[in-house]
Length: 189
Image (tube, rainbow, N blue to C red; front, side, top):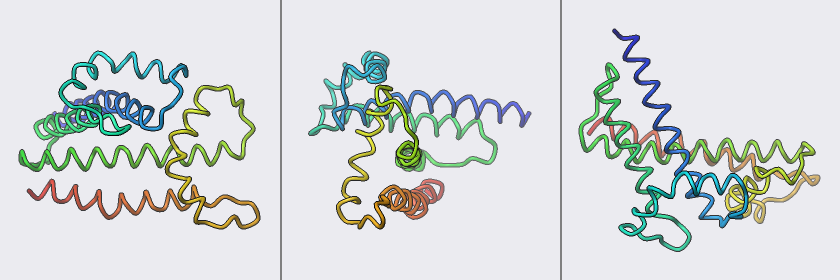
């Protein structure tokens, strides 16, 4: 019976992870004003518009941040944790704890996204890749707000850009300190 619970847990995490990724990348693409004619952005807009269009009437955007998408991502995380609470053996969190775990998972998801994207951007800087690939400019626009402040403050020893290494270190520290504390708080409530 535990094997069935593990399989159901995996399916829940996968389904919610895909939905969360769609809204998260839509949020990031809007925040950095990515090129709308990029095929990846067009897919994100088409896939999320049926839900975000009515939600934006209730939750307006703030500056360039689509707060409706952020609320939807948080709600998806809360529902995922609520379902996991009943499916996964040994998983316990109260109703307020599930709300805090939703916030922790939201922050963790964005930390993992940026960790992967900064690492990929650093690798792409060493490889000659076709700049017409729709992923390259989108990745550059999303990663630039994180790396740009670090590039301004860090020296370039021998022309080597250390900003991706420092950004990855900062993201790992945020996961270790803040997100882990929120997860412990969510399970303790």
